[in-house]
Image (cartoon, rainbow, N blue to C red; front, side, top):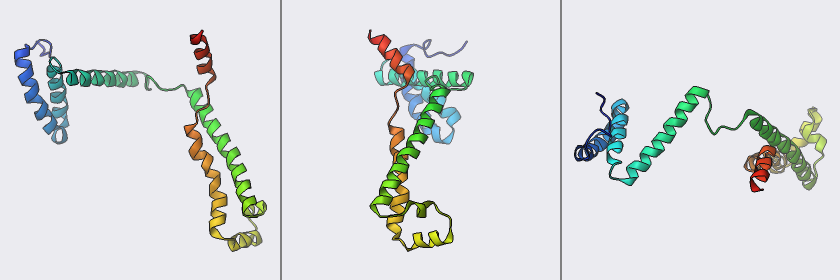
Length: 170
């Protein structure tokens, strides 16, 4: 016969829950293989009386179901499709390169730089770049990374999401 939290009478379950919970929490860092099951069993017992234990148990149940789905399918249940990752990555790269180039050209114009100096590999041109103030050269080059840091926070609208929103709103 398996010991199930639902088969244990409440008169016994609540004291066992109060006994197992601190014991399980104390064993977590020392022996997690004992601490985790004791803590889970304790919250199952205490869930009969306390709302916080029921919320914790439902959170654990959702996480456990997601973990099992991930083991079976190899991905999270709420994982975006691969084509959305590819389109998002391409969007970020194109925006970074395009906007970064515009910002670099703007900064070079602001500091009166010849753009050919920044992209040249000749020794004479490199010597000219070294004569320029280091802070302005660094600002001209590093300003191109601003779109890279801002762009991932701006999500392009997905055509599939727009079509489902339009149909659900009608």
